[in-house]
Length: 220
Image (cartoon, rainbow, N blue to C red; front, side, top):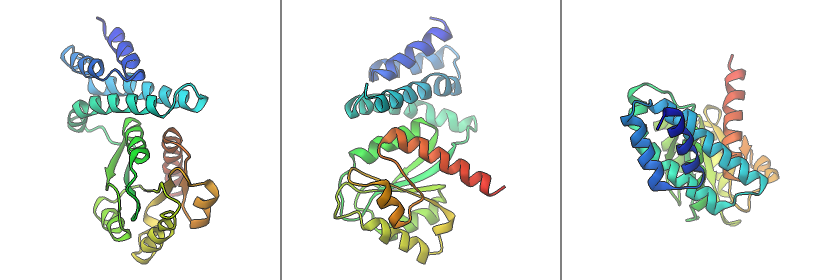
């Protein structure tokens, strides 16, 4: 199998979420001398971008996204230490968590996978994350973005509580705030003072890239 054939097959295997084949092709590529960067940027990331595009067109649904994302995550487990050795910089760092009072994490986990697949470093704090824990994580990890997830309308007010905690800690201007979750709307995100919102995982990746780019331009 040529390098081009391997990359093409890895793309297709990721697209349909064939996890065993993705693992096999990733390892085979490394044995054959394909670089971790080529596997990631020429095959895996384009495949996950196509998954997102198909989701937006209505050709894929959440189960297909999850299956493809999990297959990609297995490849990333293999490639991440190798990429770190070669000094590949992530395009941004994100702290994520489901807000206090809420234990739902399927949507957040899918966003995590899509962000990692797009080249972000993701620090996932899990569920039931208090404002204090978000503040501590931002101080420790110094992320570009912090993401608050809520699945319940009763926990959505925690967005504002978290932002207030960031302001009190003097960190609000240090980090981009993104919010999301099933009941969340753009209007609500704007009302609580968030910087960004997305209705789905692929949209979250696009918006995160936009916000980091905008901040970089503003700092020039």
